[in-house]
Length: 274
Image 1 (tube, helix red, strand yellow):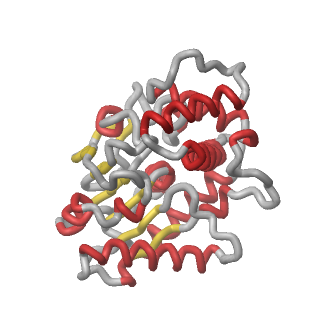
Image 2 (cartoon, rainbow, N blue to C red):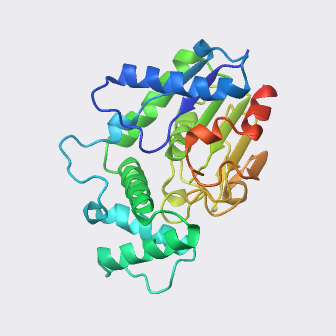
């Protein structure tokens, strides 16, 4: 029987809920989405490891404001824009207005609301920078949440979305006793140069990462329009042991939302194999 541990992505902090309640609510949501096209999966078979609270700074104001990005998050954002072939001329000395102008150009090019794009990238790179900060305990604590779920739930499949694919990758290396039929990464930024890939633990050797021990099969799925799943086919190029790296349409507009990935044909067909 398929047993799944899910690892959520950015934007999942749930104020007013305990970590246990947040994990349960996310687990219920993931189960509802998966079971829409895979009714045989039971609610008890799906557990989402909740770690968003470990990346949240209490009392922090303006967390979704571009003007309040940390220096590290802004550096990652600028490096990401260069990966997307944004207009030339971006430099570390520029302030937030040129950065906002560049995001406006990207929003127009991708037919996205400029404000929604700004909110998304601000939240995304704030959480990524917090997690990957080598001087913070947030990374260890978030990773430990996933390791605890692996040891408690004994899954044969891990599904990890967005930043969650980074957390899951590191957690699986930290938990070599875990035995999985499949690791499925969705909309993953694992191969993102400068911002993510070179900061991974364990550090990639000879510019290559590797499938975690105990994982029999690694499937990476991404919508071609997913702005953080870049470069295209980067996961299979940068990591050994990736069995499938498929980029196919998940949703016309909301291309990074986990709700659409969880109902995608390719994900369901992969789960049916396990």
